[in-house]
Length: 476
Image (cartoon, rainbow, N blue to C red):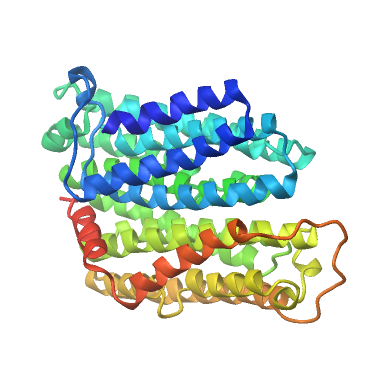
């Protein structure tokens, strides 16, 4: 079953690129999402067919942590795939252009799947690099000068980051010569044998390298440009799935540090980068002019929150995992809705968007409610995850850090809320001629994401609670 998730998108991407037919394009895109959903559901129901060749079985695995992030990725991918149908209509793409978009998106999903299933550190690194190459083509898809600049910036910064992560892997292999393996199972089992000096140095390189791809400050420079220039369904995937997949790679290395009893060093770096991300996000959010860049800085903030969470012990890890689900779905809804706003107004500038509720009530309400979801207002699960993080500060004996944490969150919410409220209310400008009316595909994915968030926030369903506990229980 594991290989289905790797083989199907690869083969369908080739078939789509060859056929270049509108029906084939859309069946392949939605069909891949349906297959992923069916496989993930079967794993949650404890039903699996182990059809992998023996030589591959050790390189890809499905553990609770990987399955957790794979489930989140599938939900965001399905939403992006459905919304892409509205994007195709709005852009009036030819079958050939659609085929190029879908083929690359399937390869991008394949690369993220490889990261989530990889059981070998070097193999995980290869797939992280593959996500850079495939997503770069999607960022440049609209072929504008600004998107070209954003793509080159993304490739350059992330390539430097991933090179540093590779150096960290080499250093780790030097410090673990007695183990002679980079399989995670071996590294976890014999983490105490790794030389502490080399392990700390390796983690420093890896956290900078993977942190660059995750988009935490100060390695975040590519993220606002890339997320703001990519097509909206691609932006949703970048923020709601790509960042999570690389974050999982860092979590697996963090577990090595925990088992080697070097977590204090790791936690210090995680806290430092986490708070720096909140500071940078707050500074830019108070003077935001581009609403897609606003969402990108919100992603930096939320990745910083995840860094802080995993440095605060069991409670913090549970809160970080809950927050990752909430952020992925809320940010997916926001980025998809930003595509509606761009279609309606033809601008990414906050100052140009007024009267959204009057111009298109469904888009206005989704935009406003999605703000509540990402800001942490009850009953959305971001409220619970942030509350648990404050509790984790005190449990970890660092209660004083909750004060700057809450201050940064308030500044970010104020900046983001001011922009969203200004865009949503007021008198709408005259409607631009020649716009294709929005259809159900432009609203449905966001509505479903918000309903899922409400269901989790009101009372975490038993399967979701089990999923969170199993994923959090991965850590030693």
